Amino acid sequence: MTHEGTHVADDARFLDSYNPLSGGYNQNLNISHGQTEFNAYQAGAEVTHEHGFGPNETQKIWDFITASPLYHNIMHNPIFDPHDFPLGIVPAGLPPQVVPDNE
Image (cartoon, rainbow, N blue to C red):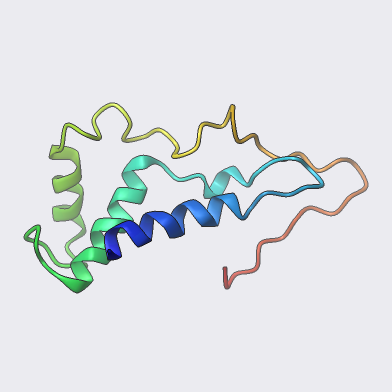
């Protein structure tokens, strides 16, 4: 549950960046499939060491992820296709959207 909840949080962080003034999203929050898997396995390792590593064993987590054929073709791809979730360009004269640090 921790693992999947981390994916939901990563997705929500990006989707919540939608700016109606610009009609787009903050692409800096559109992390790769590899990064969201890392986040999820690290969070899961805080609860259980079922995959043989703890939350601070970052190299073991990356090794586990890169060893899986599930991620080989998508490891560096963003979670959301930027063609479907475009970058927001704020029209001239409007202030850019600011995402608070606590979100």
